[in-house]
Length: 217
Ligand code: FE
Ligand code: FE
Ligand code: ZN
Ligand code: FE
Image (cartoon, rainbow, N blue to C red):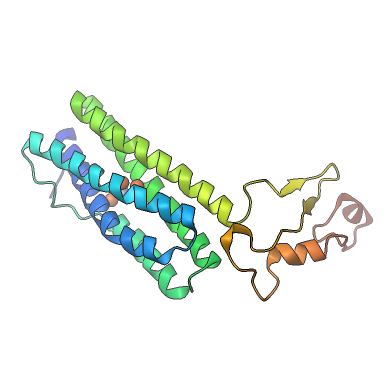
């Protein structure tokens, strides 16, 4: 369908959001099931409830406008959901999968924020003031969900306390980690952090001295 007015564009954006939210609410239970980290699991579960409310808000707006909320499939959400499915089929339950799914979830939340911000701008220019309030509620939830995903990703990596920081020498110092951090069993093979910790005295990054010497470290 050709779009020739801001009103039509607004409708298309609402329908895109409706489609995206519907696809996300269908995919979230599978993600929740696949995740092991309890905090991440719980924030996804809470966000599934919010997502159902978000669908209702768009429905309410569409009812007021006497339009069908369906009719514009969100191709991006389809792709984002497919990528999450791909992660689940390519990983075993555990830290690697949870980490990958935080990346997938963050992409979804950022995509949704862009959609709501766009719809809000259009509602403003069309002066649908009650729509703005409804859309803003959803936007706030998406922002909060995105920041919870980031916190979960940091906790899963064992980085609630920053453990990697530049020193005065301009090189990275990485502390060793306690066992079972983030609620996962310690992997059998050394992970990158453990390898760096074991190698602590050997500078894996070129420091200023070695650059000055013109050699490799
Ligand atoms: Fe949403
Ligand atoms: Fe879309
Ligand atoms: Zn979306
Ligand atoms: Fe969301």
